Length: 396
Image (tube, rainbow, N blue to C red):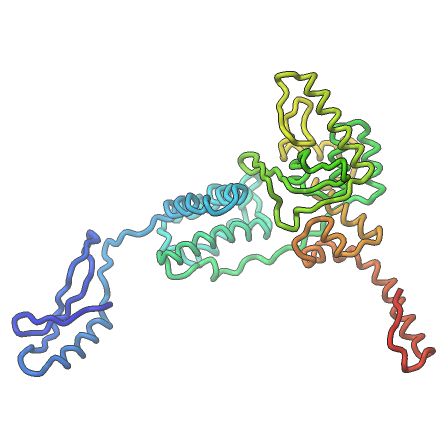
């Protein structure tokens, strides 16, 4: 708080700027009880410093920031700085979990405490699933907490609050997910069982290249180069509240080019032939687009439909239950069993760093350690045969 000395009726007063109940700026005159007659200004300044140090600004009826309104404004502003898929994820988190919980507390954003945030997290872990009433996974809870933390980070930057209460609450520990996957033999059996099913080609391409669902459905004809025999991943299709088409991939490393395997070339050639036939068959009602995999009338497959129908096919043909995304894991497993290392898998799947690859698939390489260990032991035990001047050992 700052102020200044003024003389009124031969006495020193401290004048400070403050606000009234209506929030309007007003001046407060506070007496120092020091006479302005004589050489007393230094004493008046000392008293002024004490007054300012202990002065409490007027806060009665100060308007607080409604949490609901603040979050909606934050969501509106952040929409222009992030991709639409991220925005829809934020909007879903806000509408489904964050606002319903904190609206019930009836607190302003300034009044929300770490205990309130802890209660929110406990609620998610205990009964956050809106469909079943069960608790959410640690991963889902961490995602909601991340969105909430971004809201409070924004409030800190704008000096609406002094600190982010989310950062004072310990998030649930990340759970290790051990993915299920098919062996090469199981995928072969599944392909045989599918026969001429339209989804056979989609599943086989996904298994060969380890594609994400968004990458598979995002394949366009400009990604398929028949002359150079390459397949480039550069478009994606995602869904939250609506289907979102993007002319970019998840990360820079996700943009990658594959060799067109012979079976893949057969699939893409057939897809182009079927597209031409269906365009003639449906005439004006055909839905024109550049996507490779779609329904007979040209309509692209909705992402959710692909996931659901995949489960239907597994049940129909008696295959072990896995997620559609686990075909990507199956691809990695088959690669490792075929002799590929983690760096190979990283590049093939389009991971941004090898640590991600190691965290997911490192355990699959454990079987190779036996052979490496045996080679190490053999070289070390046999080293004495070659004398102390040996400078290198061949492990393989």
